[in-house]
Amino acid sequence: MRDEIARSEPALALLRWYDSAARVLPWRVSPADRAAGVRPDPYRIWLSEVMLQQTTVAAVKDYFHRFTTRWPDVQALAAAEDAEVMAEWAGLGYYARARNLLACARQVTELGGFPDDAKALRALPGIGPYTSAAIASIVWERQETVVDGNVERVVSRLFAVTEPLPKSKPKLTALAEILTPAQRPGDYAQAMMDLGATICTPRNPKCDACPLSGFCQAYAQGIAASLPAKTPKAAKPVRRGIAYVALREDGALLLETRPPRGLLGGTLGWPGTEWRADWTEPLPPAPPLAAEWQDLTGLVRHTFTHFHLELTVAISRVAVDAQPKTGAFHPEFSPSALPTVMRKIWEHAASDPLFAAHFPR
DNA sequence: GAAACGTGGCA
DNA sequence: TTGCCAAGTTT
Image (cartoon, rainbow, N blue to C red; front, side, top):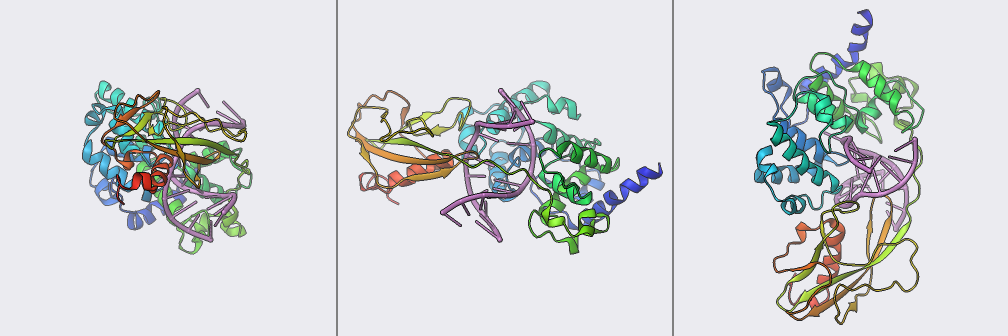
């Protein structure tokens, strides 16, 4: 029991800090409102947590607003078309999240609501160890421990864990679980993440302003900024390919929905060659229809998680009766419905005189 | 366990 | 310009 109390000291200090310093976020219930009995909306917490996976708060905010405006509850989202959700997600990245989001919404609707424990949440598509703990603690006040990048950083510093990630992950998780209080586990989880985002930052941590500095072994040793250590990542290879942008005489553009799995799975894009690292000169063309293709000067560059991409863009204007081998002509087209790499290709093509008349900038 | 999976901001 | 980093999950 004495150990329990001792362990809870950092948690209590953190919660005191959170009560006065909690960030205001569109999906969050303030600590004061939470204390008054306001329960967060599981739909909004779930949606925000999925959007926030490997993604900054700044990048998420507009998407969260558009999603909740268009689909105010999980039943509305469950009834949406796949293509509508993919288009609304376009630009946010990690598109498996959008596919799993919709699958999850449909399962939850079938179940009649979100499960109220971590294990059942964990069984849903797109919900892993982190997200299940986040929803269970924040929404349902379960004593579950969230372990995200923030928590890994905070805990590795508190206990001066010098072993590099990802090998140290089990140790960090165990330490984080010890810290988690039985009271206010949801506010505690959010406080840990706020602390990591605003005070215990990756670079130049603000230890002078940290409510936990008195408990922090890395601070005491003067090594906070160097933690957590991480195993170096492999260098990114370069892949190359050709993208084809066909403009029909009536203004329609040739697009295809990519296969439902893998890179950019289920998103809209321009037809093209494969993106290969073992390219030969010149790259064998693979146009989606027979036409006079004009190679644009310059390259479209884009970097994914594990490779750099350099694309040549070929454009053509085709007759209204043109029959593509792949994809379909879209009379209505918005660049915002494209993932970023495809939007870059569009920007490149639209700047060419052949297209510029149709799409004044 | 390792690799695949996006994007934008920052030093 | 380049590499690191952000509220991870799936296979």
